[in-house]
Image 1 (tube, one colour):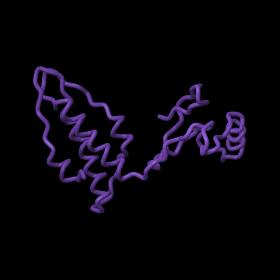
Image 2 (cartoon, one colour):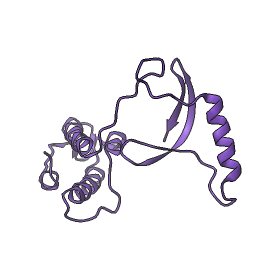
Image 3 (cartoon, rainbow, N blue to C red):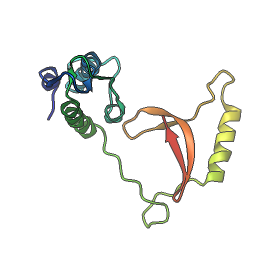
Image 4 (cartoon, rainbow, N blue to C red):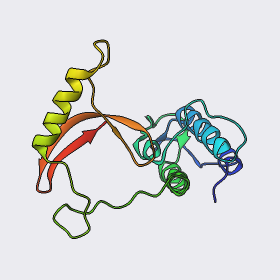
Length: 158
């Protein structure tokens, strides 16, 4: 189990004259990881708690001519952090394709359009005109695009 103290005590090899991650960016991000883990440990409240998804999306600036952190070490450590946050999140069931036995019935594309039109027509006038998806970890993400796939229509979240 990874703790906030483990993150605070984590050291990475420094790079020079080869590409590494910007040390300040990594350190600032790890401060948020520490806050998130402390909240999970019951020792405080994180201002902006991170999720496993957030860990997988982070991208750091690279440095070459000044010291940075070894990219492989940082990436491997973030994999451990993502695993820890995944363990702490409620487990999400793997989706079952709609045509297989035991699948949860999926809403049809036409029914989705009808529902969206109805919801848009009945929402308050000053409400934002944005569609959100609630992820298994409870966070809301905006829908940024749609794709046609062999399985149906896929919502792309940001």
